[in-house]
Length: 183
Image 1 (tube, rainbow, N blue to C red):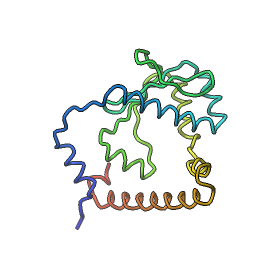
Image 2 (cartoon, rainbow, N blue to C red):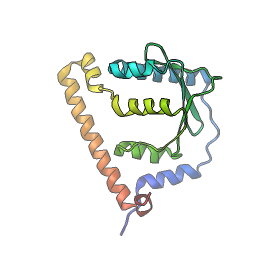
Image 3 (cartoon, helix red, strand yellow):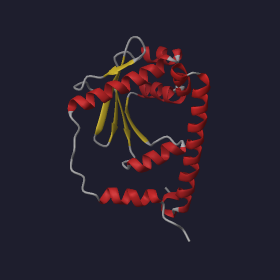
Image 4 (cartoon, helix red, strand yellow):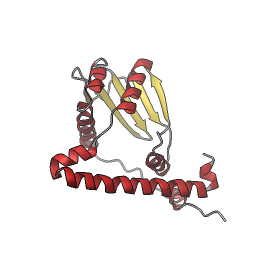
């Protein structure tokens, strides 16, 4: 007897729930976007080849889109990112095609890349793809700068173990749900 995944139950509940069209204040969206840019630049600075490749794309605008959320990035001469002007026409638009946040989170936890629709400059898309494939955040190293090597390594092991367990659980729950296994 196949059991239904708790994720599919929650997802069906959220689909039917009449959410009001709540929009966060513009200042909050701007602040979150600036923090994302700071984090991405921190990660890019750890990979010299990434900054060199990004510097060649100076002034180019990439727009990320998911549902009603949108964010524009502009490549700088230093090979880093800045927020793109709101009114600027993007050179590349990357749109996440998965509408469900739960399905998107499940895929990410499994280690899958989300499906993306690409529109715009092919060369810029190739550079962005290279960045996604080759640049990784060494969170454990950053944590070691704050709490020391041993505690950071221990915490890293605990988090990796939790992620492995979550991936196994999600894989098992997806396999138990015949509707999700065929997707």
